Image (cartoon, rainbow, N blue to C red; front, side, top):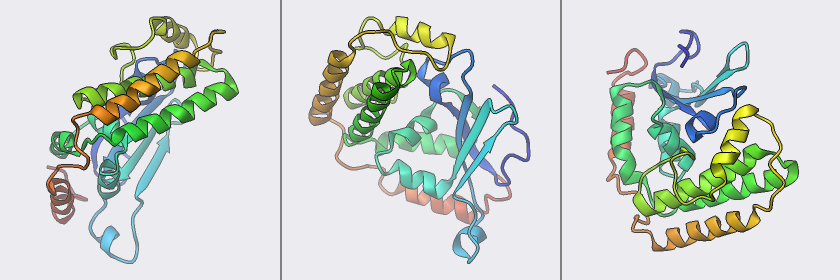
Length: 241
């Protein structure tokens, strides 16, 4: 994985991880690299009249690598809103930069997962399935299967698992689709009726949500709030522990 230029972000970063197709297990030979992370604004850019950027974006000159970071507070607010996307970024096993604060956040993640995270995956799947219907491309079809299987696994185990090559319970032809996607980022899906399998997985996710032993609400006990306050007041704009 590439080293990021020092001037990419004027604020200290808590972590940077890999998201997108590389995390999901089906990058193409021409896939760009999606990096996601968290930066920390200094207290004076949060409590004063001039606010620092909650979100920063950067793209390499060759447009092959993009980085998006959220300020720690915004990221933690999203974490508590059943947002599976930021949860996956936090727990991604593909880590470019990390700190002890990243480790603290990851340790709190199990207490933030609820059965209502299923709504994120159901909504994401519907969006990608509609996109597949409009374009006929393989990419949104694989995204549809990936998010449904990730959601099913999460409801059953409480574990975030994003790699479509590892997730269980999908149709037998998924490896064939993944191999086809590796050839090119934008390629047409095979001429096949995928609707019955998508509908069956959607039903499984809905059933998994209803029967899950995951809690209704986050159970972090205020630890996430305490972490944000502590890091902000420590003056993390100058250094990270």
